Length: 284
Length: 333
Image (cartoon, rainbow over all chains, first blue to last red; front, side, top):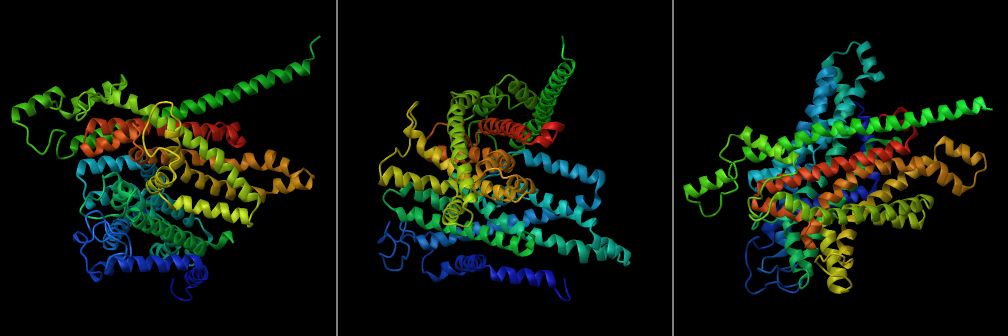
């Protein structure tokens, strides 16, 4: 919305006033920056074996801030690489489900009638399927690569988005300001661009923010079970699985990636809640 | 002799009660019929996915001699057209036969399901019951102490419980209670040994407890603001009566509708829990099957999991209909 930009400026102000959400945003930006730029600065490759320092605890060996694993690989570098993989998959799978979900839902909501009924029936049927299990079948069939994981998660991730967008589109068509715009002589294109889309954007942004942690959890879940990202590539899930094996003697191997994952998911959830409160102030 | 009006009242009571039972039965029948196409889609989809995929169950590191390969495929019926294979598979399913496992050569999938299902059901049911028994009271307590220390405490725990995934909780609990404190076994499964169950059940229940507590708190707070609660207050009813008779039945509805997703979460979580704690349940068979590319095993397990979810969702819907007077009267959702 150009001009006064009321809705978005108000929302930004409300978000900025939410200290916890801003802290989470800062942490997320920091983690992303660390995942993207960190590894080359630390002086170890993720698969580099340091024969002199195997399974050393954090802060006890030169350069290995968070210790090393059983093979002498630097934990900090591997965790940052895992973070990078998890973030990349989560963001691209969210983008895929955003594209499919928004176009599917907007089309159904705009066409209404029989087309809407058929399209939403498809969503209902897919909704009833146990999704994680179908993602497992897909990864079994297509081999365990990051691309498979992305496709499998994206294939099921768009359903809720489609429902939200369709509901919004249906409701928005009937609203007074749309009628007012019609009375004012606005064409379909202008109504969609100026009235429908800006009002859709809020819930879409909120739900997309809340989809990212969901995808991160599914990806790590599969990688933890050994069905997702494979060694030597690190992901938060397979790092936690490795750490769980070693936890009796080397607690940090579990604690480092687990803390990283929990912080990531927590911050995304909190930021999503904050965005929802900022964009939809009716609850307050 | 007959008190006519009383008779009429009794008769109309029976007619009404009967009608309620009939609408309830109709509701169950409709929902069961509705589950059939879903199950059919699940079976067809999983079958087609496994058959359309590149590579077969006998692709191993060492290529098999062609003659042996052909014999194996003939023995498992894989040389037939896909439609014939599908027909055979569905016919088998109707007899409770999920086919042979391609990798566990001595077992049929049905045998693996039969051995795993009781284990998975035991820990799953225990986890759901534990979550209900702890999550709902915690949520009520937090709601009644809104914005006080108890509320803050319960809700921070709940946020933590929701953000920490099962595959982090499980090793963490095993580390603290199994390795450091040595109170409980880290892994294992002996029939009738309850200590083996504590950590897996606690792991599965924790996220559900956290979610239930949040849901219950929010829903009760909302209901307490409703006009009929204010009316009850105005009539001078005591607090406990308002809570138990007026607020709780309404506030429980969102909790009941969460039961379906809760069952899905517990069933998914059991994959991790059974793997970590070494329980011989369906989840571990599924993970093993997925790692071995054992198609029939994975398909069979997914079909059983899907059927379980459908049935348990139906139960949740029935409880919901029973609690919600609007649905109870109309007999439809």
